Image (cartoon, rainbow, N blue to C red; front, top):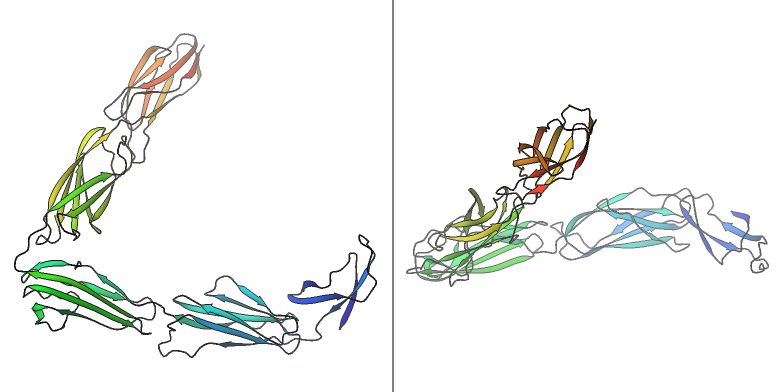
Length: 438
């Protein structure tokens, strides 16, 4: 059908409008052009599909489905829509319920397609649907697409490349394979060397490495996933007639070289073997200021958060390394010095009343906070001053002190709290507050 309307501005050659969810095209009827800047009405015709109540027909095309259910390369799904009535308006889709995407069809398209490419590994659900130019929506459909582009992963925790074992030393080979997508189809680990008669010997996870004969040995790891991606890796170790234990040296560093009391610190312990590229394994114990912390080495390093405030002054930290294999790495100790400065606290004084009658006594509450994040509370002696005259003394506990002031003369007094220096805190003074006695 055709509808005619009047516009107050000159129309472009083609103007897209969204009407009831469908994209339609408006073209001006043949008419004399309006003068530039004129508001003379223009006449235009609006073409609307007639009596189309049928939604588009959907389809989808994929490469042949693999037996494993997983594609081993990037794959493109082609979504198709057809509509013999008003024509296809657009194809819509999302992946795993994410952001809706849309590809609009050219005007008059009875058939239209949209390619959706899966270029990385994953287990996807493609949801797709379409609309025609009469605003008829199709039902949504789901299509599962599985893609595996990666080989299996290997994790070996007990053997380091190039390690030397003593004759008949028992060292379990701890390893595991993983595949996050199509899964492991088959795997195998074999050892070849003098201890196996130079013939491949299968070794299960946790079984000891062969070490009955001196010489070089090779461990071969192989795993294949369900789409055919293969992992191949070799590691090597040597069995010696006699093996020298590797000396170790701990190195200790702190996250801040000149901290103050109550400052959060992290200690980093790095272990290295003397004259060896092998990385020590085991754990370290750090002792400082009467407290001990323990951590396992990861790639030869342990990072230890210090959770308690270290007292001000020069402190000696001791590191003790405990080897997980004393036949390879020698346990050792080391020390480092750390100088901790006094914290600079903040003091405040608050009066129970700012104005009292003559002969009455005011109560002052002193609060002292310690900068830092370790929760240390201030303690020490605090003095209350009226101007330059000390009028009271009290003890701060857990950052607070409450003091009954003596009776003062009539007039205005300026009350200040002064914290004396302690072993961990520097001296500090509060701002003065006014007390009127009358």
